[in-house]
Image (cartoon, rainbow over all chains, first blue to last red; front, side):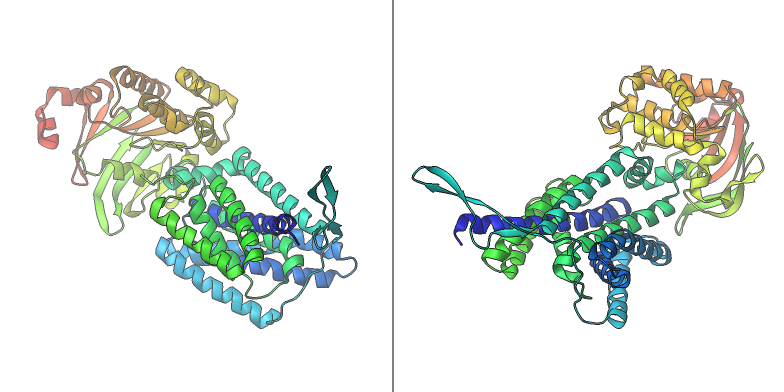
Length: 308
Length: 232
């Protein structure tokens, strides 16, 4: 394939990456922004979402769309509930102390991962996409009489991949409206800005924290349900998305949702493109290097605020 | 009304208050006077449930406030204007007031009433709190607290660092609240203000309350101010 169509194909793969990564990282960012908790177990909530999606889709039977639709609703709710329980039984007990929550969520990571290994097993399991039409894509070439369109061999995507991108955009817009327009969003932002004053104004901060931790995990699970027809469910699948989400959140600025989304698009796209042209390892090396530079030259991230 | 009984409180292992007893009645301004670090802010935070009591009790019209979780204190009708304003900086003026209104589920009527007290805020409803001037921020902190329609108002240095016209406005609103029967606990450093608007003055020294006197008596015995504050 020539460079042009090849690059276009890589960008499409990158866009799918970016869409899922944006969801994942926004979940991490909300939890850090509001609760000041660095949730190392975030990748495991993603993994749980995928595994539960597999479980539901095998239970449901019938047309793959039925199981998938169930999973899309149930998996985020189940994972959100597990996270809210973890908040209640673990994080609250250690008073959301920054250092101890890191250790606690590392523990949570292993508990979730090993429990999944013991019950679900070590195999990677596929989930069938609800629809998966192959779409050939056109490209343009310059000929003697101007531009003409042709269909290069191998340049194609699937309707499902495009749907993942669209779904991520819709979910992110919905989340933004929820945070900025709804009453619960207002309560969450007030808690983020000044926890003590939120308490003094009747906001039950404990409940807000449980909700936020559940919401962050639920978004990760939702991202996983969207990607699992492309990637397969596996008990170790949480590692890479966790690493990339941390990279994204640091580059974007901790706790800044617009920054997180911009960084997710940038990192997701470049990860996809570099993976296609070079190798996934080179892509990770470059992303990690970028984080190092951000930490040295702009520690608050691209969109973050310097703490006073 | 609001009654503090022998309360002991502080930050973690550091005890700040050692058996303070006070009370404040409806339509009364009780001023807390004492040096920096004497425990005035700690006292207000303890009332709000933001610091746990080590011992003692706080009752408000028969309800034991010290047994309630912190987020339920405001719902009892107690509002807090903290030192340094502590606004929700990235929220707009309207949203800050909205947070106050949510405490008791108050309506538009309360909102209008509060905005009538501070017409300047009405012009700035869509502006982010952090972009307001110092005086406007203080107005907003007051407005946010008054949106809860409190029966007790805790004010921690509300006029600190403000220009005289702003100080006058804040004092005016404080007096208006008193005339409406709100019980007010005021931490204030300006002695003139204290003598002008307070009904009683509670001295706080090293986490204790050695004496509470009426403002009238204090104006006749200025040596007490020298004794507790070290100033004339």
